[in-house]
Image (cartoon, rainbow, N blue to C red; front, top):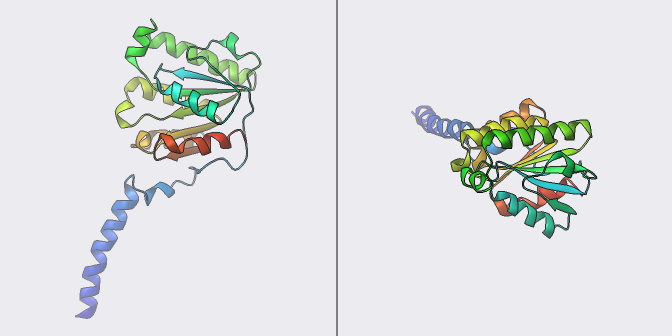
Length: 199
Protein backbone atom coordinates (compact mmCIF):
# COMPACT_ATOMS: atom_id res chain seq x y z
CA UNK A 1 0.00 0.00 0.00
CA UNK A 2 2.79 2.43 0.93
CA UNK A 3 4.68 1.59 -2.28
CA UNK A 4 1.55 2.31 -4.30
CA UNK A 5 1.13 5.71 -2.66
CA UNK A 6 4.79 6.53 -3.34
CA UNK A 7 4.37 5.63 -7.02
CA UNK A 8 1.29 7.85 -7.24
CA UNK A 9 3.23 10.75 -5.71
CA UNK A 10 6.32 10.31 -7.89
CA UNK A 11 4.41 10.34 -11.19
CA UNK A 12 3.08 13.94 -10.92
CA UNK A 13 6.52 15.16 -9.82
CA UNK A 14 8.13 13.58 -12.88
CA UNK A 15 5.50 15.11 -15.17
CA UNK A 16 6.13 18.59 -13.71
CA UNK A 17 9.92 18.19 -14.06
CA UNK A 18 9.62 17.08 -17.69
CA UNK A 19 7.38 20.08 -18.41
CA UNK A 20 9.84 22.53 -16.84
CA UNK A 21 12.76 21.09 -18.79
CA UNK A 22 10.90 21.22 -22.12
CA UNK A 23 9.70 24.82 -21.74
CA UNK A 24 11.51 28.13 -21.59
CA UNK A 25 11.67 28.12 -17.82
CA UNK A 26 14.55 29.07 -15.53
CA UNK A 27 15.28 25.37 -15.07
CA UNK A 28 15.53 24.76 -18.83
CA UNK A 29 17.71 27.82 -19.41
CA UNK A 30 20.81 25.91 -18.34
CA UNK A 31 20.13 22.87 -20.53
CA UNK A 32 21.89 24.41 -23.52
CA UNK A 33 25.58 24.32 -22.60
CA UNK A 34 26.35 26.58 -25.58
CA UNK A 35 24.75 29.51 -23.75
CA UNK A 36 27.24 31.36 -21.53
CA UNK A 37 26.57 34.02 -18.83
CA UNK A 38 29.36 36.16 -20.34
CA UNK A 39 32.55 35.61 -22.29
CA UNK A 40 35.45 34.12 -20.28
CA UNK A 41 37.92 36.35 -22.16
CA UNK A 42 37.64 39.35 -24.52
CA UNK A 43 37.15 38.66 -28.22
CA UNK A 44 36.81 42.23 -29.53
CA UNK A 45 38.79 45.44 -29.56
CA UNK A 46 37.89 49.08 -29.59
CA UNK A 47 37.18 51.20 -31.64
CA UNK A 48 33.67 49.93 -32.35
CA UNK A 49 30.89 50.97 -34.68
CA UNK A 50 27.31 50.56 -33.46
CA UNK A 51 24.85 50.20 -36.31
CA UNK A 52 21.30 49.03 -36.84
CA UNK A 53 20.03 46.00 -38.68
CA UNK A 54 16.42 46.94 -39.39
CA UNK A 55 16.50 50.52 -38.05
CA UNK A 56 14.97 49.72 -34.65
CA UNK A 57 15.45 52.42 -32.01
CA UNK A 58 17.04 49.71 -29.81
CA UNK A 59 20.28 50.83 -31.44
CA UNK A 60 20.21 53.95 -29.26
CA UNK A 61 20.10 51.79 -26.12
CA UNK A 62 23.28 49.96 -27.11
CA UNK A 63 24.93 53.28 -27.97
CA UNK A 64 24.09 54.53 -24.46
CA UNK A 65 25.41 51.32 -22.86
CA UNK A 66 28.63 51.64 -24.88
CA UNK A 67 29.06 55.22 -23.68
CA UNK A 68 28.39 54.32 -20.03
CA UNK A 69 30.97 51.55 -20.25
CA UNK A 70 33.35 54.07 -21.82
CA UNK A 71 33.87 51.87 -24.87
CA UNK A 72 35.22 54.05 -27.67
CA UNK A 73 32.49 53.92 -30.30
CA UNK A 74 30.98 55.53 -33.34
CA UNK A 75 27.20 55.50 -33.68
CA UNK A 76 25.95 55.16 -37.25
CA UNK A 77 22.55 53.47 -37.63
CA UNK A 78 22.96 53.49 -41.42
CA UNK A 79 26.69 52.79 -41.64
CA UNK A 80 28.23 51.87 -44.98
CA UNK A 81 31.47 50.06 -45.79
CA UNK A 82 33.51 53.27 -45.94
CA UNK A 83 32.53 53.96 -42.32
CA UNK A 84 34.40 50.83 -41.20
CA UNK A 85 37.85 52.21 -41.84
CA UNK A 86 39.89 52.00 -38.60
CA UNK A 87 37.01 50.09 -36.93
CA UNK A 88 37.93 46.88 -35.09
CA UNK A 89 34.43 45.76 -34.07
CA UNK A 90 30.99 46.25 -35.54
CA UNK A 91 27.94 45.83 -33.30
CA UNK A 92 24.69 45.04 -35.09
CA UNK A 93 21.57 45.87 -33.09
CA UNK A 94 18.96 43.72 -34.81
CA UNK A 95 15.29 44.66 -35.02
CA UNK A 96 13.06 45.49 -37.95
CA UNK A 97 11.07 48.71 -37.68
CA UNK A 98 8.89 49.51 -40.70
CA UNK A 99 8.18 52.98 -39.30
CA UNK A 100 11.87 53.87 -38.88
CA UNK A 101 12.70 52.51 -42.32
CA UNK A 102 9.92 54.63 -43.81
CA UNK A 103 11.12 57.75 -41.95
CA UNK A 104 14.65 57.11 -43.24
CA UNK A 105 13.31 56.39 -46.74
CA UNK A 106 14.69 52.88 -46.73
CA UNK A 107 13.24 49.62 -47.96
CA UNK A 108 13.79 46.23 -46.33
CA UNK A 109 15.69 45.13 -49.43
CA UNK A 110 18.01 48.16 -49.26
CA UNK A 111 18.64 47.58 -45.55
CA UNK A 112 19.35 43.88 -46.14
CA UNK A 113 21.88 44.68 -48.88
CA UNK A 114 23.62 47.24 -46.65
CA UNK A 115 23.95 44.67 -43.85
CA UNK A 116 25.21 41.98 -46.24
CA UNK A 117 27.83 44.39 -47.56
CA UNK A 118 28.99 45.26 -44.02
CA UNK A 119 29.23 41.57 -43.10
CA UNK A 120 31.29 40.83 -46.21
CA UNK A 121 33.62 43.72 -45.40
CA UNK A 122 33.96 42.54 -41.81
CA UNK A 123 34.82 39.02 -42.94
CA UNK A 124 37.45 40.16 -45.45
CA UNK A 125 39.05 42.66 -43.10
CA UNK A 126 38.97 40.64 -39.84
CA UNK A 127 36.51 42.97 -38.14
CA UNK A 128 34.82 41.36 -35.11
CA UNK A 129 31.03 41.12 -35.35
CA UNK A 130 28.79 41.26 -32.27
CA UNK A 131 25.04 40.87 -32.64
CA UNK A 132 22.48 42.12 -30.14
CA UNK A 133 18.73 41.48 -30.08
CA UNK A 134 16.93 43.08 -27.16
CA UNK A 135 13.39 43.00 -28.52
CA UNK A 136 10.89 40.57 -27.07
CA UNK A 137 8.56 38.06 -28.67
CA UNK A 138 6.41 40.79 -30.21
CA UNK A 139 9.43 42.19 -32.09
CA UNK A 140 10.20 38.91 -33.84
CA UNK A 141 8.65 39.82 -37.19
CA UNK A 142 9.53 37.78 -40.27
CA UNK A 143 11.92 40.53 -41.36
CA UNK A 144 13.70 40.47 -38.00
CA UNK A 145 14.01 36.68 -38.18
CA UNK A 146 15.52 36.92 -41.65
CA UNK A 147 18.11 39.38 -40.36
CA UNK A 148 18.85 37.21 -37.32
CA UNK A 149 19.29 34.20 -39.59
CA UNK A 150 21.71 36.10 -41.84
CA UNK A 151 23.76 37.91 -39.19
CA UNK A 152 24.14 35.38 -36.35
CA UNK A 153 26.11 32.81 -38.41
CA UNK A 154 28.64 35.53 -39.29
CA UNK A 155 28.94 36.84 -35.73
CA UNK A 156 31.61 36.20 -33.13
CA UNK A 157 29.24 36.74 -30.18
CA UNK A 158 25.49 37.11 -29.74
CA UNK A 159 23.48 38.67 -26.91
CA UNK A 160 19.70 38.34 -26.67
CA UNK A 161 16.90 38.39 -24.15
CA UNK A 162 15.27 35.13 -23.06
CA UNK A 163 11.94 36.49 -24.30
CA UNK A 164 13.46 37.25 -27.69
CA UNK A 165 14.54 33.61 -27.87
CA UNK A 166 11.12 32.31 -26.81
CA UNK A 167 11.11 29.68 -29.59
CA UNK A 168 14.88 28.95 -29.34
CA UNK A 169 15.43 30.24 -32.88
CA UNK A 170 18.31 32.47 -31.79
CA UNK A 171 19.97 29.89 -29.52
CA UNK A 172 19.59 27.12 -32.09
CA UNK A 173 21.06 29.29 -34.87
CA UNK A 174 23.99 30.19 -32.61
CA UNK A 175 24.49 26.54 -31.61
CA UNK A 176 24.47 25.31 -35.21
CA UNK A 177 27.13 27.86 -36.12
CA UNK A 178 29.21 27.44 -32.94
CA UNK A 179 28.67 31.07 -31.87
CA UNK A 180 28.80 31.90 -28.14
CA UNK A 181 25.48 33.28 -26.93
CA UNK A 182 24.37 35.06 -23.78
CA UNK A 183 20.70 35.28 -22.87
CA UNK A 184 19.57 37.90 -20.35
CA UNK A 185 16.29 38.51 -18.55
CA UNK A 186 16.00 42.16 -19.55
CA UNK A 187 17.84 45.11 -21.06
CA UNK A 188 19.38 46.17 -17.75
CA UNK A 189 21.33 42.89 -17.65
CA UNK A 190 23.13 43.47 -20.94
CA UNK A 191 26.01 45.62 -19.69
CA UNK A 192 28.07 42.83 -18.08
CA UNK A 193 28.09 40.36 -21.00
CA UNK A 194 28.49 43.23 -23.48
CA UNK A 195 31.54 44.53 -21.58
CA UNK A 196 32.98 40.99 -21.41
CA UNK A 197 33.52 41.07 -25.15
CA UNK A 198 36.00 43.93 -24.72
CA UNK A 199 37.51 43.57 -21.22
